[in-house]
Length: 308
Ligand SMILES: O=P(O)(O)O[C@H]1O[C@H](CO)[C@@H](O)[C@H]1O
Ligand SMILES: Nc1nc2[nH]cnc2c(=O)[nH]1
Image (tube, rainbow, N blue to C red; front, side, top):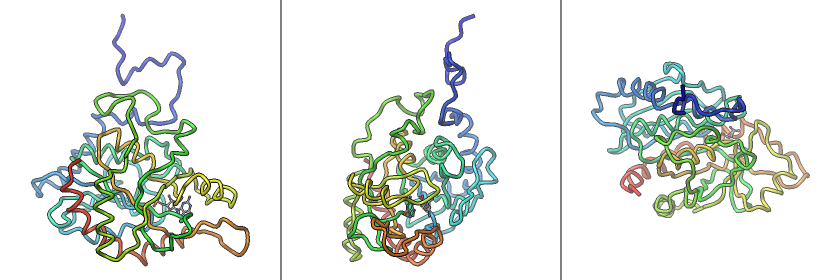
C-alpha cells in the first residue's frame, strides 16, 4: 500500500544517515519539553518573549533577572546536558524590566559530541515557548587588532565554516511546519537590533565594535596559520558556537541579536607564549560580568519593543 511520505518515514531510498538529528526533534517532542517548562512558570500568566543564550562564563547575565524560576536541563526528559565548565545547564526564567525572558545558562557544542542539530534543539524550544527574538552571546577570541580582552563585539555577520562542508543543522528531512527548506541569511543579524545596541554602547562609553564571527568545530584552539587564514578572510572573532544557532533561529523566523565577549587575543605570530586556554576564557567572563549584566539589562526592553 502506498503511504504518503511524511517527516517520520521520509523517502530514504539509500538508507542514509543524516549528519544532523534535527528532524528527530519533532513538534510533538519539543512541545512536550515546552509544556514542562510552561507548567513551572504558569504563575507569570504570560509566555517569555525573549530568549537569551549565555556563552561560556557568561551565565551571570541572569543576575539581571527578577523573580527567577530555575529549571535544570536534566529535569527535562530528552533534553541534552551541559558538559562544559562555565555552562551551568539550566534555564533561568523571569523578568528583566517588564520583559519575561528565558535565559539558557549553558549551550551545547559540537565538540561535546552532540550533532549539530542537537546543538540547535534549544532554539526550537525557545520558539515554542513563545520567544520572538533571541540574544545569543558567546566567548570568543579576538582577531581584529583593535579589540582588547574584555571588549564586546556586536556580531553583524558570520562565516559558517562547519556549514560549508555540509555540517549544518538543517541537513536532512525538512518539516515545513517549522520552517522552509530554503531561506535567506541576508541580514540574519537584525540591523535594527544592531543599531539599538550601538546606541547603548555609545551611551555607556563602551567601544562600538561590530564584526564578523566564525565558529570552528573545536575543542582545540587555532593554529597561527589557521588564524592568519581567517583574518585574511575578514573574520574579527573566533569561537565554537552561535553560527548554527543563528541559522536555526532564522529558519524559525526568530529575530537575532548576537554578541561576543572578547575573552582572549588570537595569536597570529609564533613569538612568545600565547597559549589560549579555557580558564582564561571563563575568568574574562567573570571579570566582565558586571558590564555584561548592565549591557543586557538595558538592551532587553529596547530589543523586545522592536518586533521586526
Ligand atoms: O561559544 P561559547 O559557548 O561562549 O564558548 C566558547 O568558549 C569555549 C572555549 O573556551 C568554546 O566552547 C567556545 O565556543
Ligand atoms: N575557537 C575559539 N573559541 C574561543 N572561545 C574563546 N576564545 C576562543 C578562541 O580563541 N578560539
